[in-house]
Image 1 (cartoon, rainbow, N blue to C red):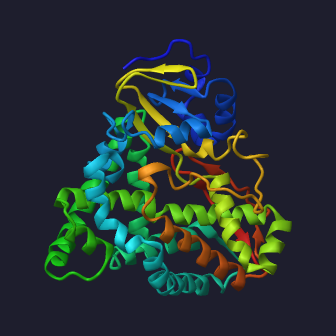
Image 2: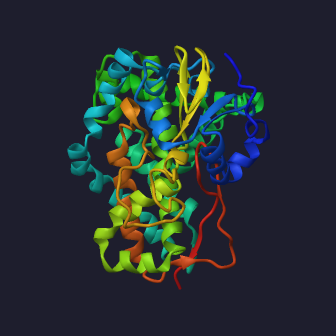
Length: 390
């Protein structure tokens, strides 16, 4: 693998700066070095919309089968880390229950009771920290029920996500971070193994049942379950928190959404574009290639930065502004063949709880005593979201 020596910005970029707020960094890279090697994460960051789309849609040049991938290291080989026939085979077990029409049939019946229970629990007080009290538990419990993990509590599922995310974003190969992720990965194997044994003999229609019935090994089912725990269980909760924060910091937009619930959909889609909960798609170069004037060699590792593509001024006018009248398909759920299979369900997991939250608390607002901070470049969300409704 070659490392470009002409980069002036890459060596100055730290993991800590990316975690705190990657968007000013992405803006500089898009303008000055749209394909930039960043030693801190061992990746070329690809930051412009056209380049990100090119990388995502040309797997013969930019393969998902990345050497030393933190996802493989943490989860095992999974649907996001293979291409071609293996990708199609693994995805077959997930696609059927996640198709839009199927999701429309079961999602409200799963999500609404879970959301209502958490709203009821919150209603006795004048305030709450919304990420812990509502956004994250509703997200993890809803997908847990769909997956067939309904016996697991929200705290366990949230912890699993956090520990897997520590490993999945460990591009710097920190051994302490990896140890946390590895311990949780082993715990999941131990907890879920007996459930898989039962489902093999007694299918129940859950996503896990579909995955077991497809042409996949037990190891692949476990790896892809961990991927869903990582990318599909918590991220709708993060997107919900981002959307609530976006609306509460844009009161005129909030008033429009309250007056016309048909605007829930564009409000959510614009929040996904504006602060994408999942930051990148990782790829490896298979043959000599040139991208935005940068020569790449076989073995070079790239991060196609979805969150940056969604802020590219060349594609999105006034890209840093939250604007629910904006039109166009964003990249928050990925691009190309690896577009998120669970996107239809994730959208329901954001839209339905958001509408129910606005209905329950007409005076919902941010608590002025608590500043809202967002963090993360690979998995981004508010660290806390204190709200009041008295």
